[in-house]
Image (cartoon, rainbow, N blue to C red; front, side):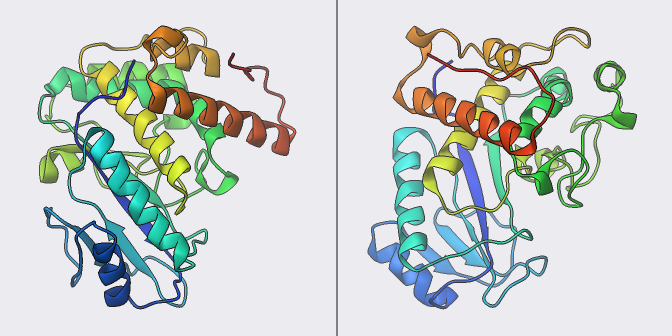
Length: 276
């Protein structure tokens, strides 16, 4: 599966920076990406914006929010913003997250259920892309999709839910925020930890977009093997001929990140992979 032109947006939370919010917005604009410093709001803009976020801890906290982006042009704007953040010593701590929205205006009720089923099915694998504070039930701002630690029962339960349009999980604070569909027409992925590293952000954008593209028309089974290899194979990522450059880099980065966290934890898990 290749990186598509489906629009996406990112929210980058930081805990400190060498410059004020207004100065940072000006520097991003001077680098060719329009950015404004605004009062707190949830409005979708045509430009990047910097707003406050009361959930963050630190000396100079702020959230950098993109407009809808797409394709290579959107990725390049994201790279520029990350460059400016790093040049001005933007920092993150455990209170920070990095959230990605994907346009879901072409989704029906079935597709919205499918994306929840997919995330619940593979959550235990996806967790190993993340540091400990973003795994399982470890964070109040990105709660688990799996009920009672039973993956198969959760997937079956989601599949039977037919009484609403926007998703089974109500409220913002799940790894997959389905309430964003009612407000913005998007699906929000909230699990990623805070970062200002472009390679981490774009890999997560590509990965979560692949989930959205898959789930729009297909669903996973409740039963069956759950491994990293199975996850990548489901997304069509084991066929090198089908991977463009940005997807290739993302696949390799996520594979290495998974292996790193498994090794760091000394976990008894056997689904490590070495993509060739």
